[in-house]
Image (cartoon, rainbow, N blue to C red):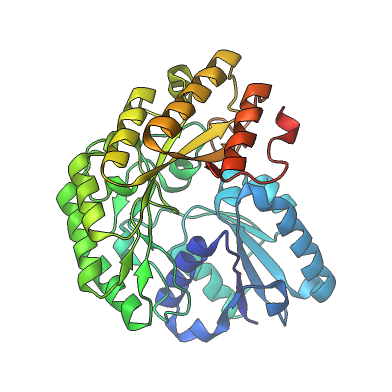
Length: 387
């Protein structure tokens, strides 16, 4: 029976990495591994692999019910990704036969290989070891059938209280080598892709031994290699990555300005209160964030600054300070604000914290910025229950 990878716009990067592992380790069975971009692409019973975030729980439960109705017990589902790794017991209770915790690598290939050989692994929770060096697998499948932004770094040393990255990938950054990236870039261009973005916890930390001090020559070599291999457009320091304030330097911004096509730089600040940043374990100050935004604007980019609203333990004083900082960033540097609502994520230090309320002045600011085009990321109803 075939293996289906349930692919959605939200998990594209994860599925691209997963498919790269399976095609590399099981090349003779690549035709049995199929992409299901829609639920109706699953046309016969088989093994369905899910990788999903906590916010997608409702959709995934509905899909499992539909598949069970369609195929009965002849289909089987395995869950991985942030939700599964953060709370495997709850994920298993949703109706999955297996839950895998950790990174996709040789142990996952062995699991899938057993299924394809007709051997059904025992149900339960499987804990996989870290892959090790990123060069072990390409950033996307050798077949070229699923292309995604290039993952250049995995793992983050900072351990922010709201973030799943250290729990998923560890706190020691692993960088993909320039030689491996050149191969990946050439392969992408040869298969018809003319532009790329990059995936990293902090794009400006690529190649660096100390995440607070960027390795500017390493980043310049990365971008030059991408151009030399034939990419016509490059986007660096933008979604689906961002940069940390302490890694922003004028000389690095000049390199990005000269070699890339993005007009914005995404910066994670999260709060305008130093007290809140300290409790968040961010490892930088508000003042460092403001200086980084100033440098980004001075280099000719529009700063796109992330803030999280409803952080646990916020007081009206904290909220007022955040509003003041947002006003400064908007008025002095033309910054766009990218809003997030705090959601407790499994596997994080704040997994069991509750969001704080959002006061009326902050709600008015959010509405004002949304109306003027100065804020992105807010969906209807995001903050209704947090007022």
